[in-house]
Length: 554
Image (cartoon, rainbow, N blue to C red):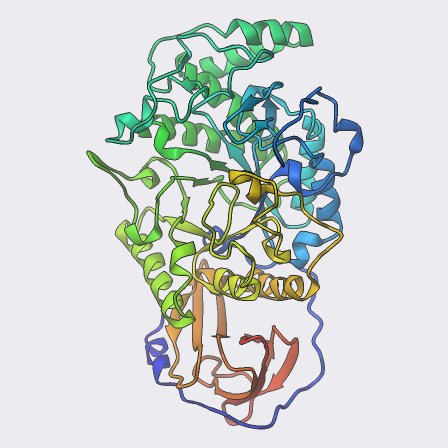
């Protein structure tokens, strides 16, 4: 960053009573510059988002009565494809979609003390090599990825490798050389977070095992019944020969999971329960995932729309961007970025977001720079969120601050994660639901809160159009009113981007000194009101709406 930018804090701002506006602008249809460190990710539960094909709703008999919101509701790949094609994600400024695990789930259900539940969420694997029939087929998932790519949207697939699904009458326990059923994790140190079970009846894969094992008989029988046993064995033989890996339990799963990158072209993985697997295993897994993606790109050059490497973001419960690269076990400082992770979900944002805009933006610019500066040759990023599928204490549980939530999430430095329904204030408290079921209601397409939705769209589009919002260097500007004004500057890989952001401001007309942020500009655009503004004597007069000003170059 050039030195003159450091003088930006001396910019002056005064109020005025006259707004100047010229004609509306029409932008060309072209993809915005993309940087994973500033990505705007939309996280959805496939089953809860949109039902595009009712024919697969009951393809597996899961008809037992469940607790509220604990059964399959019909969402599928077809529904996601439909919304991509309608431009729903594009209009929201989304440039990456993260969807829950897609492989076949256990057929039975269990009572977790919160009501009988089926595996609609995708985290109870039965067979990593098959797609969950209630979501659709592998070919439909490939179409989903291809459709997203045609719309300049990347796909992150959720991954779980440290446990199978619960044991039920329809879903037998895997062999003891593959899984453990105890003890329960106590989190006293790293070993008691890894070599243990997360909950009762959630068999834990022995990821630490160096013993070579045969395939579980339950998979052998299943594959033979489905007529694909010989093909699966042939592929396994080829994988272990080419990779040089031994046939340990986790290496089988590494093969099965990385096949989705190799065969579908997904752009990255979001990995569940990172701290419950050894770092050495993640090093192998992440290396194999990136190799698989490169293989897909080599074999499908006409379908690859970018040159990015495979991207891996982890869910490390308790990780906060304020702590830098490491996660502090009592006996070990674990740096998962060192074993192939590109980013971690930031569990601290929902608490930090109570701060005022000026403090929040400044703090997160510092977190971003600290992560990048700890090891300059090993970039590390974080992804912020305000609500999620398993966080019972979101930033705005009662959805009373939907407008503030959008502004704070989408304008704060770092990656962002929109949880499906954030943009329409989907309720996070549902009558009759217990526990995390409250967070997982069905997307209500019939009752969009249009005011809230439009607000999220404007902010999301601005963020997508300007990589500086999430990844630029942040400078607070001198300003004596309520809220804050700030400039952000991005210069990387020969791409430059500049924005001026106002947040938490008083609504009404405002005159802003912009000469040092946009030194040669004669006109600017307020992306929030979609008005073009002339620059007169280094100043623009702008209308503040909902506390926001989003200034960009013409």
